[in-house]
Length: 614
Image 1: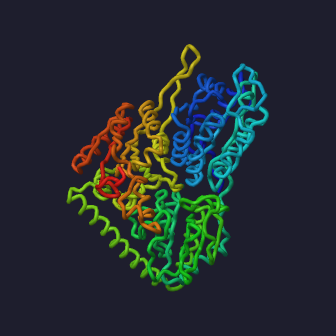
Image 2: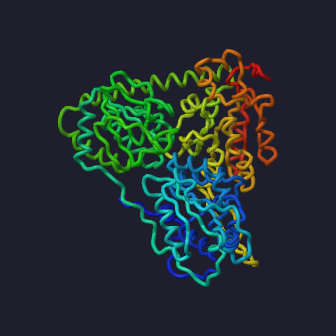
Image 3: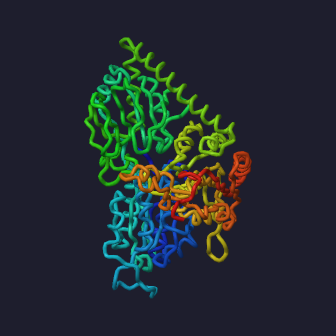
């Protein structure tokens, strides 16, 4: 089944345009190309290497410029927008320094399988710019800098190839398996004068989805039917929300329990085939009877293995197996002994598996499948009841921790709320307590690179927005951002927030009126790093009580004051009752299209005592 371009799929008011149009500069040609392909927003950080592009955006909107104060944040915002829309996230950054600042964002977007296209200005030494501007911040191999974390990178060497390069960049980013693309735009070419130019000539028709042959799929079904207790783990299939109902149908049809790594919402929590969550960097505790594992867009770090008696079926869409391994890199993941491997796209493959399973259900005795379903459903009910009890117990004790905070959030959650989660140490309690069932309602950061979610969250919040332009008599195009104010809740730790340049994100959401609810789980340290230090070979830090490598204390950062500086309504709370009140008020604020922030003071992860060296 061929997939159409983002602009066409979402019913953009601007279908792809064709033919010659009047333009005055290369920069205007670039902007008109983006407009013709339905690009709504361009995320970026201003630099002196792209003045002719930004100058053209004054009289050509959309795309609407979304100003960021740091390239890392802007790139992550584009990734969030791309994931939430299942379209493109477009970024414009400045030359060498902008690319350097954005490198962490490339890694985050790559590991999140986000179809982001990053355009960076570039100066070529000795090539003059027609406007007389200085050329600097150049690097002869700038195009290779983010090379590990992009699907394709190139430099625009002639204006004649501009429409083709833009089309190829957008197509490459969106083609399975999705990921970022990097294109350098020479400033001298963007400043060149023109009279007219050609726009991209065709829609971005994506490749047909890949489905294994029926013989392979039947082999999978026979294996699952004959297994004693098969299980399935999925990590990234839910980045396409239409995969979720297909996976549910498959799980019920063949009687397989599902573990969700929760990078996206891969499986509804209240469905009785849901058995829990796979840790980001480890395996879940599997039932001893498990003899078959289906890995659906789920990769393992190189040191992880299943038991020798477990048959493995791997279904993946990334042929290099680099992007489905949380916290991985260019090595990718384990090469497991596998019974079946298939490179495919999840949604249509699951659909076909269900069709074949339905045919098989009409023949033979399938009573054992009903027995398996009953066992799985019993395990589901016990697991989820235990989580509810733990959260309720924490709430009733009035202790402020991840479980009680999750209990409060869950009580105030609505079906249209979207969660962007960057927490690490509080993560297990939070994801068990906030019950999510709606596909496309959860985004996170599988890269493990700190700081991604502060920008991702406002990109997600813009995913239901449009820019309504109004032309002024001066020739400039103004207007406003309109659309649905669905609440976006961003949970992040204090260390994660600092790494994520929270100040940049706060300025942007305040400036544009973007409804993001930032909740900072402030435990005054990089808590997730303490266990490995405490388990170091000699245990010196643990024995002496030296926490100086970890503590973000004395002073503990007051994020509410930081938010105030940017005109964002904020609270600093240390009691559960105050958190509850702030949640109610904060959600009302973000529904009105304004941001809010709670600085949630938790117990310091390393304990109440300060580091012994302070």
